[in-house]
Amino acid sequence: MKKICRLLYKYRHAWLLSYAFIYLPWFMYLERTVTRDYHIMHASLDDLIPFNEYFIVPYFLWFIYVAGTLIFFLFRSKEDYYKMCAFLFSGMTLSLIICTFFHIIFHKSSIRSHYMFKHRSSVIHFPSAQIKQALSFECQFQSTFFTNGIP
Image 1 (cartoon, one colour):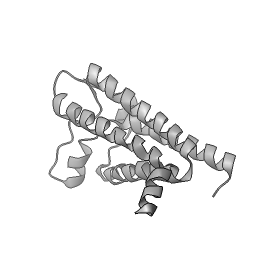
Image 2: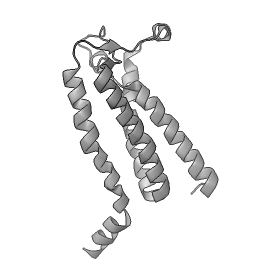
Image 3: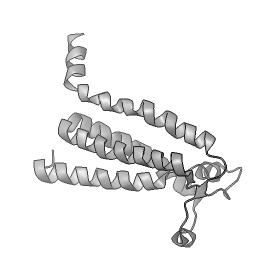
């Protein structure tokens, strides 16, 4: 029991992960309610990118990458963990605020199929947040490894 108490005390900064209790309900609310009178985020460059429904596999692996990165910094460096959470959560919150007031969606509504990959690909909504997350992760890794040395 004392080991568990020491472990909880040592990693008490993990409380920031409770942000999921704010983010996930808000995100799910937007997915349920933004069904009309919305703006589709689209650029002409999007038309030049070929669609491949199998890309949904690395898309879902993205969530493992996010969780793994947060867990890595949770145990590796408290200071870097705080920086990562601040950068990540601020971008996620900003994305939700913008989508709340401007009703912006990113999915391709024309993708409808009975195939699993095409069906799953039609529900992708916030790719811009993922680009910001990838950049923040890379910056934090570079900062940690070049400042402190590779573990």
